[in-house]
Length: 81
Image (cartoon, rainbow, N blue to C red; front, side):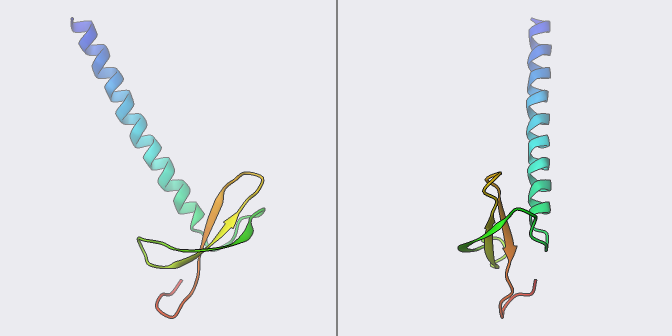
């Protein structure tokens, strides 16, 4: 019984640590995607979105080779880059 409980605690701890690792990596990836320079290999699309957290307009860039998307903040009269 004690070994089962210890195994359960260890597995649960690994799941929680894995979740926090995933969240930190996702945040790091988003932070690098919001850079001012467009990464090489990205082409502009006709898509313009509004970031729901900042209210800023963003142009969507797409890399056909990797399938990644990059969001470039656009200047407008209400917000500064």
